[in-house]
Amino acid sequence: PDARALLSAEFLRSHCFRIVEGEDDEPSLVGLGFEPVEGREVPDIRGTLWVDRQTAELRRLDFEYTGLAGARNAEEVGGRVEFRHLPTGAWIVSRWRIRMPILASDRAWWREAGSKSMEVLAGIREVGGEVLEMETAAGGGGVAADRAAVEGTVWDSTRSVPLPGARVYLSGTSHGIRADSSGWFRLDDLAEGRYAVAFHHPRLDTLGLFVPAREVELRRGRLAEIRLAVPSRETAARAVCRSREEGEGKTGSSPDGVVVAGTVVDALTGAPVPGASVVARRVSSPGGARREDRAGSGDGTREAETGEGGRFHFCGLPAGELRLTGSFLGRSGTPRRLTLAVGDARLVKLGLPLTDPTRVVIRVVEPGSGAPVDGASVLLGSDRGPVL
Image (cartoon, rainbow, N blue to C red):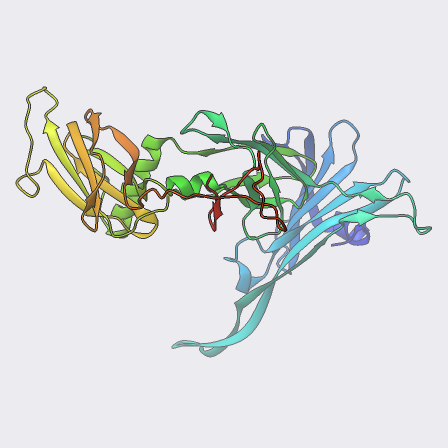
């Protein structure tokens, strides 16, 4: 419906009007609701004209179709038209959306009446548009349309420090930015809507974690705030078990079980070691009684093999003092001892002595004479970066 239709004498005669209070999230608006008079069976509309309480300026029109037999059960068949008052004094439609029913004729058979034609909902067509930027006919005096923004911080809960350099982005879009030295970020010039805010940082790869995106609702002219975080080691360890159980169709872990997850790496280079064996053996029970289970001799000992990225996890271990030992191709690392209470979770890293240290002798000389060069700086590197 356009302004001419809404202001026509025919529309005023065929519709009833009432005052509508603004919703809780928009207390600054008051509405003029309208609907067809009783007994009007032709296709029509009902809706609300929303105006600003203080200035009486028109903000938007919400409406839906009525009297469409085939579309009675269609959700949100109607639309929204938003208005904006420009500094020049002119009014424009700044944003609009219409969901239109697509009706088709179908025939049904009744024993009493025989074949009869009827309208059915065949589909819904949605169209819309939005003004992103405006300028005068002379090419100057640009006026930016109201846009949304989101800001927040990225926090590393495993170290209780900000996470500078994290790349924050809106999933499925080209919008992204890197957090500053304090972990703060801000994304501007965004369209209104619901988004999934995600982030990535090499720290997540080191911990072997994937942090799911967080949803945020953005509105024009408003700033949304959100806090993103690398989960704590305990939260991350539990998340590994939850993900595994969901994939196997199981229910949640027992609250009495201990969760241990982590990675196995080369102690010298830090490279992950897939296919390594990790044995978790209980050394003592929560009461302090000394015991040491043999591998496979009881529920106090478990063994796991690292997967991609050198990651492993134990879910539902017994509480008490545990000893973790990693090994690969006959080489074992120094056992790691953990004391865990009932319900605890821990994220750990085990190093294996897979790469033997190498002694390198380097002599720096002049290119022509071969004379030794005193005080030269030597940088030894690899494809992983500087080593020495």
